[in-house]
Image (cartoon, rainbow, N blue to C red; front, side):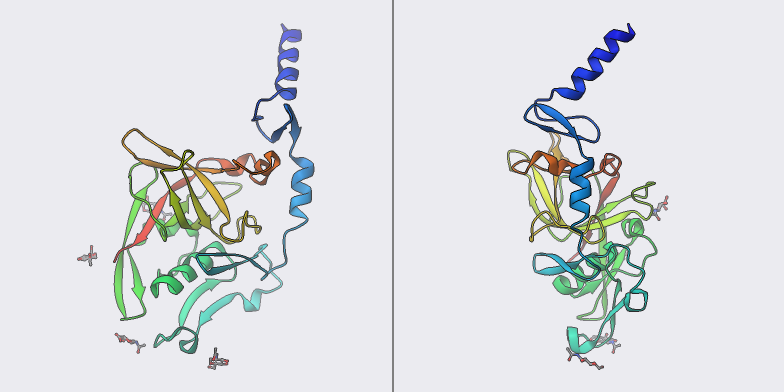
Length: 250
Ligand SMILES: *[C@@H]1O[C@H](CO)[C@@H](O)[C@H](O)[C@H]1NC(C)=O
Ligand SMILES: *[C@@H]1O[C@H](CO)[C@@H](O)[C@H](O)[C@H]1NC(C)=O
Ligand SMILES: *[C@@H]1O[C@H](CO)[C@@H](O)[C@H](O)[C@H]1NC(C)=O
Ligand SMILES: *[C@@H]1O[C@H](CO)[C@@H](O)[C@H](O)[C@H]1NC(C)=O
């Protein structure tokens, strides 16, 4: 019995069609450990403040949780930079919340209130419209319970140890539900600090129910990429913790 189990495990480890379990990737029918690919990839992470991509024109910068830049972390936009009649708080450079708020400021002239952690954005009910000083309501959609998702929505991850102790937020840049393998692209800061393209950080897989309900899977879509790109996601970081998305109402 023990002998049989050992043989099975060995076979599973060695042979693959296109996927390997856990922290391995499939190359030419064999499973390889992600260890070396990930080490190499991590060695390419740029320093704090380096431009890592632009999502629909809005720049994202490397963060690395760098504490040497603590005194430059708080980012405010002055009236001469925005044309608004007041100073606008963007966030702590270059956390995930900073990119999300900056995206809404640049695109919609609006910003959601200060939050301590990214997951709290899911419970917010309004944003400030700096163009007219009024409030704009927010709508939240639970992952898997709506057919409704669009560019500009903020995708929210719940807190989960050890990878998401503060939750996470990304901006939905593009939605392709009609594709053979439906996906969205997202822009973000302080996830892995290297975007998969200069247009987006990651493509995430979408599962569509028969009724068209949209479920975003927290897993990189690597179709068309090298199989080892799978290793950019840690085994644990791909846990399903996307609670839903938040929209700025008109
Ligand atoms: C905006 O005004 C500040 C002073 O309040 C000045 O230091 C800064 O250079 C100005 N920026 C631009 C883009 O004009
Ligand atoms: C959001 O609100 C719900 C209901 O009040 C609460 O249970 C939940 O903990 C809140 N989530 C966050 C991240 O604050
Ligand atoms: C900015 O302008 C808006 C409307 O034009 C006004 O409601 C608001 O009070 C102004 N804010 C400041 C700080 O002057
Ligand atoms: C925004 O929400 C408030 C409180 O729920 C509601 O009274 C108001 O009518 C809403 N405004 C718009 C424009 O939907």
